[in-house]
Amino acid sequence: MRINFHGAAHTVTGSRHLLEINGYKLLLDCGLYQGKRSLAYERNTHFQFKPADVNAVILSHSHIDHSGNLPNLVKQGYEGAIYSTHAAKDISGAMLADSGRIQEADAEFVNKKRAERGEEPIEPLYTEADAEETVGMLTGVHYEEAFEPIPGVVARFYEAGHILGSAGVSLEIEEKGRKIHLWFSGDIGRYKLPLLRDPVLPSHADYMIMECTYGDKSHNDPELAFNEFQAVVRKTIERGGKVIVPAFAVGRTQEIVYHLNQMMFEGDVPRVPVYVDSPLAVKASDIFKNHLECFDDETKEFVRESRHPALDFKMLTYIRSVDESKALNERTDPMVIISASGMAETGRIVHHIKNNIENPKNTICIVSWQAPDTLGRRLADREPQARIFGDWYKRKCDVATIGGLSGHAGQDLLVKYATGVKGSVKDIFLVHGEEKQAMTLTGLLKEKGMDRVHYPDLHDGAEL
View 1: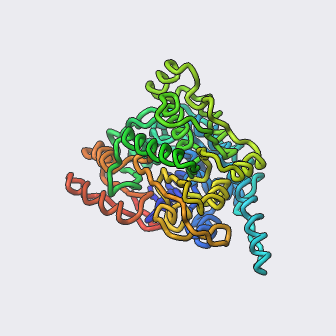
View 2: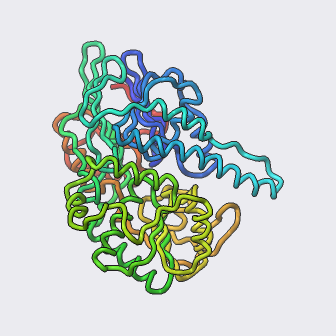
View 3: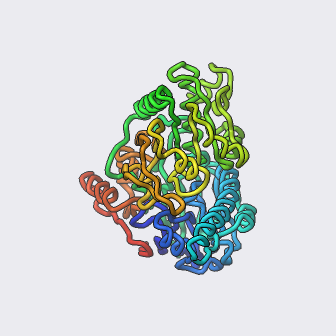
C-alpha cells in the first residue's frame, strides 16, 4: 500500500491524496490549489497521475480546496464514483456548478482587462458544463454507513463538525492478508460552533493523514469570537459604515447569518439590513434547511424559542441577481454584506471590496484563515494598497480579523485528535498546513511521546 501526497502538502489548499491498494487507485479529495494565479493554474491543470487510472474518489467535504478540481479530473478521463455524505453531495453539487460559472465569468472579466493591455486571453480552468457532468457522479452515503469504494477497502464517514456534511474518513484496508486501519481527518471542526454537531475524534488507527492548519495556536472560545464580531458590527454601523465579510459560501456564511440573527433578536446591535450576496450561499442556505439532522441541539433550541428559522430573519435578504448585487454598491447606508469567496479571490466579494476599500467608515471583516498571495491575506496583513482586477486601490477602510470564528480545530483540539490514536498509530502524516504550523504541532506531539510524525513534501509518497 502506498500514499502519494499530491496536494495540500507544505501548504493548506488543494487537498489531493492518492492511495494505491491491491492494484487499485483511490483518491482522497480533489481540491483546487489557491495562491499565486500562475502557480495555481499550473497545479490545478496538471495531475501527477492519469485521472482515467483512478478507480474511486472519496470526498471529505465540499469546500472548494477539497472538491473544486473534481471537474478537471472528470474532464481528463475519470469515470468512477465520487463518494461523500448525503449533505456533502447536495452542497458539492451546488458548489461545483457555481465554481464553473465563476471560472468562466472571471476569465471573461480578466480578458477584458488583458485586451486593454494588449495581452493574450486566458481560458477558464473549467466550465459550468464540466462541473455539471461531475455533479452527476456524486454518490451520497450516510454517516457511519459502511461502503466499499474499491476491493479490499471498507470506508465509513464520521462527523467532522467543520461544515455541513463534512466528515473524517475511516478506511479498513485488507491487502495481501494484512489488515490496516487508515484514518483521514479531512478538515477537523471545533466544539461549541454554531449550527453543527461536534466532531467525532478517532480512537484507533494504524496510520493517519491529518490536517494541521492551526497547529501553531489555539483559538479563542467561540463565544469570545462572537462578542468580538458583535463589537466590530456595532462600531461600524454606529459610524455609518458597511461591514463587508468575505466568507465561504458554505459554512462560514451560515454561521455569520446565525450570529447576526441572534444579535438582532437580542438587541445587541442595531437592526440594519443584512445581505447574503452569493448565488452559491443562497443555494447552500436552502440545502442547510433540508439537512436539519446535522444541526446541534443548541441551534434547534434557539429555533424553538425564537419561533423562526435559524437562517431567516426580518432584516436578512438573500441576493439572487447581479443587478441587486450592483445596487448594494450604490448605497451609502449602514449594512452588512456577506459574500463569497472566503479568501476574496473570486466572485462578487471582490467587487464589494473594490467599491468599499477606500471609505474609512467601512470595515472589511476577515473571519477565516487566508492563504498566502490571496487578496484576503493581503487585507488581513493590513497592506496599504491592494491590486484588484489589475488596478491599485488605497486601503482606507478598517480591517478586522476574527480568528476565533474559524471552522478549523485549533492547536489544543489537534493535539487531542492525534493523541486519541497514540496507543495504535504507527505514523501520522500532517497535511493541509504551512511549515510553521506543522513543525509546532510536530514538536507538541513529540512531547506527548508520538515520534512518528511526518510532514510530506508535495508529491512525496510513503509505503505502509
